[in-house]
Length: 291
Image (cartoon, rainbow, N blue to C red; front, side, top):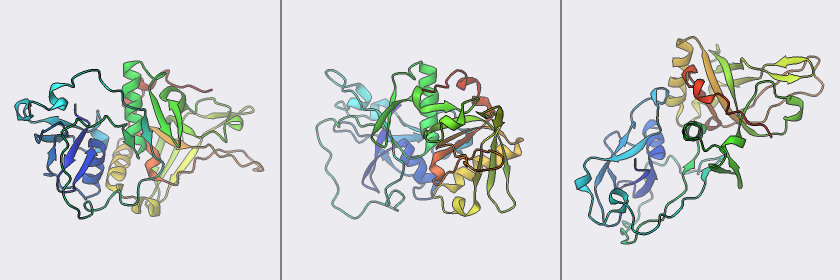
């Protein structure tokens, strides 16, 4: 599995995650060229799962070789690196994308020369919560949730501490806690063209169970660059009955003076929500951590 490649038309070194987003934002063609980043190597790579709808993905998109013999003898990507492996930093989750993230192609410039020295390993950088959820599932499988880390807003957190289940948590103590909250939920479309989500599992408040809700407006969805991915996933889940597992990077909100208490999550960036089918529930058992 290869994490990065050169896209020569864009004159850009990019991750498979970014290639996938650019494709589904109609910026990158399905037959785009990808080249190896290895020392002295120009082998062509394939971006696996590039045109596969996100709701059908079981693994993150990745690059792979067409043939091992296509790589240069000096290519450390295909043949391994000499000496001790250099450690990569924690994953990075950015709350906002750069303004030019979905530009048609890189600004016109002289082609960059390929250096002879191997490129230093770079931290994996993500903008969509769905990518971080996939990493969470991988670390859950590998049993290293307590040691694998992600940088969010300058703070380094473990995956175990970052992901929190809403079930029976005392919401009054957590309204200021921004985390990746998750739980089973029901999903339906609204008459206005948006979506309404209600968690099946509840927060606790005094003696009451409070089921948090989320509304995604049609206006916000239409302004979202990768709305094709989002709508395809949500519509498929609704067609299958609407039961799902939802993840949100947000703070629970509960009004102080309401006659009847309730909890809502507000998502002002659709990159910060991920909704998946119930089949992943088994992989999520006993991964909740509150501290």
